[in-house]
Length: 170
Image (cartoon, rainbow, N blue to C red):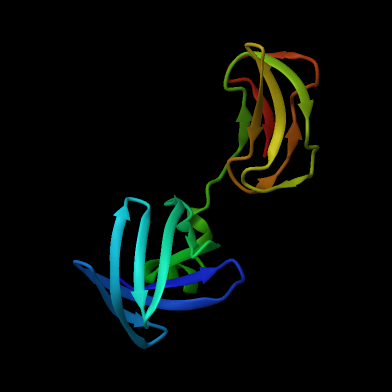
C-alpha cells in the first residue's frame, strides 16, 4: 500500500514498499529502491541500502494518530503515515471528522482536587495536564484526551469529588 510519510520537520515523501523474506523493494518519491534487511526482534531491524548500513528501532507506534517514532542509527524520527484514504478525506475536507470529540472530564475515582491547571477559555492539546486529583494517597494527573477549549471548570480546588463527577467541560 502507498503512504505519504511526513517527518517532524514537515518534509513529506511518498513510499510504496513491499517485503519478501529479507528483501525490500518498491518506490520512494517515484524512485525505485531495494535492499536487504534482517529482523533482530519485534522492534529492531538492520537494513542494507545503497551499500549503507542502518540500525532501525521502533520506539513507539500510535495507530489512532497513525504516527510512529523510529530511531535510525541513533537519531530519533517522528513520522506521520497517511494512506490513500487519509489523503482522499483530506482533499474532500473531511479529515477532521475522525478527531476525538470530548465534552467533559470526569473524576475516574473519588478523591480530592489538589490543583487546577487550566481556566475557562484555555486551549488545550491532547496530553496536557488539566488538574491533579489525590486519591488513595496518590496524586493523579488528569490529562486532556483530545485537543479542545475549556468551556467551564466545575471542580473547586480543595474539595472532595465522587467517581464520574464532572470536573471540566469542553
